[in-house]
Length: 98
Image 1 (cartoon, rainbow, N blue to C red):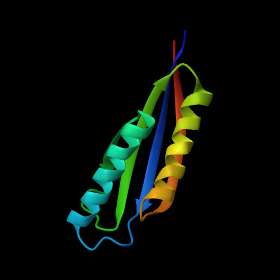
Image 2 (image 1 turned 90 degrees about the vertical axis):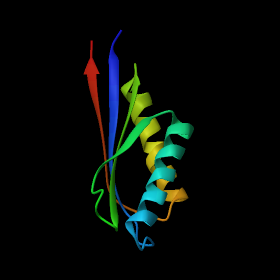
Image 3 (image 1 turned 45 degrees about the vertical axis):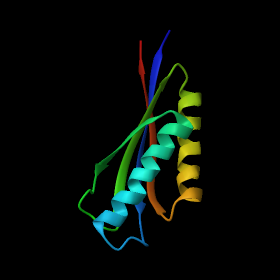
């Protein structure tokens, strides 16, 4: 049986945030809701000091590239529809381990 790790790199603009504290509130909510709704691991991986942008990394482990990438694409759509952000970049990549 193969193990597949599907990863998401998401860069979002937060045009409505006026401080780092506002940004952290939005990003924290985003991470929590993604983890609960999609059962994925996620973290803010860069741009922590930027008021207007956030870089989120997420991953899911499964036995199917199709399944992992489908879940991550749904997560991107969820972020777009549920949070006051503009998506600047979304990269999805899978790695295989046997």
